[in-house]
Structure formats: C-alpha cells, structure tokens
Length: 321
Image (cartoon, rainbow, N blue to C red; front, side, top):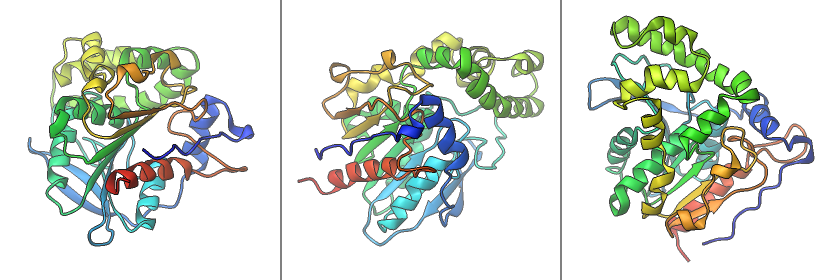
C-alpha cells in the first residue's frame, strides 16, 4: 500500500466545528460539468444520477453522498473535479428524495440502506470500467455495510469511506447534545421534517405529524420516521442494526476509512482500531479535519487533500505495485 498523504490542518482552521462549517459554507468548488440521468428504481420510483464522462478505458468512481447531500455538496464537487482532471469517469447517484427529485413512495433513505447501494453498484458494474466506490458520512456507512455484507462478492474493486458515523448510537447521541444539537441536528431536521411531512400527505397514517413537527433530536426523528419506514423496531434497533462498525471485519475489498479525531459528528472513542477491522481495511484517523472538512492551505484554503487521497488509493488498487 502506498504511504498516506499526511493531513495537516492549517493553524487558522484547527477546530472540529471550524473544519466542518467553513468548507461547507465558504469553500464550495466550481460545479463540474455534470450530465443528469434519471434511473428507475426496482420499486417503481426514480433517482437522479449526475455523471462526469471520462476517457475510454479509464476507471469509474461512484460517490454516495451524505445525509441531505447531493452532487453539489462541496466534497462531491471537489472529488468529481479531481476525477475529471484525471480523465476518469465519475457518477453521483442521489438517494431517495435528494438532488431535487420527489420521493413518491412510503420509504426513505437511511444509514442501513445497503440494498440501495447494491443495486446502484450492480447497474454500474455492467459498464466497461474498473469500478471504485466512495461514500461520505451517511453514504459511507451504507457503503461499508454493503461491503461487509457482500464480502468477496462486493462489486467495487476498491472503496473509500470518509467521516462515517460507524456507530450510529454514539454519533446520534453526540449530535443530540450541546453545539451538535444547536447547529447540525437543527440544520438536518429543517430539511428532513418537510420531506417526511410530504410523504405523510401522500401516504396518510405513516406516522404522527404533530410529533414529527415537535421533534428536536435525531433520536426522536429516527424513532418516529426513519426506523418504522425502514422496517426497524425502534430507534435503538435501527442504530444497532444499521451501524457499519460491526461489519468492518468482514470486508474483502481494499477499503480506506478516514475519520478525523475531532469530527463533531462522532466521538473519537467510537473509532475502530486495527484489531476491529479486516486486513483489507486501511484506517486513517488524523487529529484534525472535522466532518468532511479536511481544508488545507492559507486562508481561504482549498479542498484538494481529500480528493487526492482517495484517488491515490484508487490508483494504487487499479495498478498495484
């Protein structure tokens, strides 16, 4: 394995919250030249898929976005621009109800939805490109869960997961307290609740609208909406069964997992060590980086470190030494 590209946060941007918020709000790269496709899902809906077309014979990188993310998220733009610069192919599929698409079905995407990842990868695997998969935050958990469940049958040649809430109970508890609740949980619920209420309007009886409107934490929202729609008994069953951390020992594809120790979405105490993962898994846990931040350089900074790290990992998997 090639040596990691060391990550050093700039002095002006060392804190976990700063590394999370500054890139998301103020460092969004230019929009790549996406071409949109609409894919029918196996259950009769549609998802939006944004593509970057590369050169013949070059690899394809698929990125599974995070909670309420899209192909326009700062990390998606940065990675797809780096993919395009190499002449590779790139694709960002959107989860149900994301990317500007309605969600007509009484279901929603969730952290344990490895089946969604599986059918997307199965479709992409039919194309004549070496296939690499990356996942960010919630999408990273879904990808790692798929890899662990699939073992040697996993379709991606190699994978990478960034800022993953590997232990959903630890992550959600962290976000439902203090600054996490005041900043991030509130931000996510501001978009998740309207989507849930739109589903309820189309499918009356799914859950209690008043309780959803009153929800102030992930624990409340996941118990009322996410868990029952996904077939889990309750929020605790969801967090336990959807977490990817227990499946890391079963991964059989070269997989890079990057989690900053100052990620405000997951306490460092919940991060795995080498004894808790498969020999195929490379763990990188820099001191700084925040949640999908990893900004570098002098003010106002840049976001090139993370795409370069992921693509260097994929390049090595594509042309092993």
